[in-house]
Length: 140
Image (cartoon, rainbow, N blue to C red; front, side, top):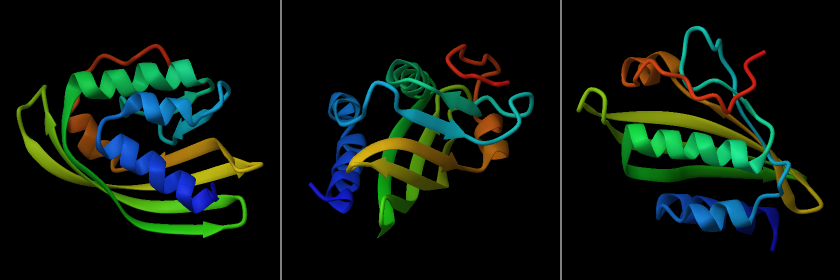
């Protein structure tokens, strides 16, 4: 599979909530990063393993209903890919439905995704999230 096909399939799996398919495509040492100040936003930090990522995905599913998750733009260059993703979420903490835009930056090694950085509006997500932080992230 090409990098474009791999990323497209990962988004299809996530859109359909097939987390098993997403996780199966990632190596055990997959690194997922949410840049931001951990004291200011719940969803910030770095997952250094696939199991840490699963904890964060589970935390998201416990706190938000994903009404829609769509990759709208995908760019691939060499061993890197970037995507613009549109979300339609309902916060279980506030009951509010809202839209969000995120940016993904992927790194591949030998055709395998090894790192993903996700940028989002951390202030909006914090306003819609419960205060408790998950312990899965390295926030140092």
